[in-house]
Image (cartoon, rainbow, N blue to C red):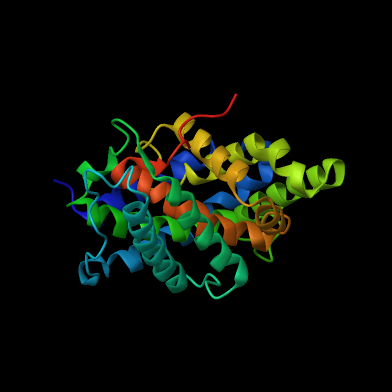
Length: 270
């Protein structure tokens, strides 16, 4: 069985190879800067990975009735959000900001309708020592990837700058055309795909969940979030990074490690 550290290192060894397929719409600028970002992710992830054996396995395991029991679903999700925030703080994300706090609250709000089990979705767990190890390793990868691919940097060609700017420009364009409340519905599929494309590059995500499923889930995340909060957060590049870290990351971790998502998020409304 592959250990947590070995899995992360193996995933990172293929990271540069996969970079060339990422985010084609952004153009050639990403390809030129992607290797630098990949090296940074590799160095950061390897450093953090050394500490995995010191982290307590405190994430509660899913019980058979958690999916329809809203109270248990909220407790479960709250634990996942707390661990996600803890790891994000280590990576320097502004977890004390209102944007982050509101995003974490939004994830917990989703769980009040219960959690939906996706058959055969938790494929990644078998590659880790156990479910808790999956959460620990994946949270590290997701928060590092959030900084690398969705957080703006001073360099205009940096992948994080390109992605966050593209998403915020898409949101601002929709707001200008149809107004803040309707904008979410207009751009949910487009932004959901942009998010899935970036998230799918992160080690531990690609190959561990179906990309079409991931895209549907993230489209619903955009469409069903509080429109006031979501349009405000996604209207700035900095807000994009915080949204991805606080809202998207814990949902992706739960999908991969346990095969569950907020109830109704696996399918798109007609």
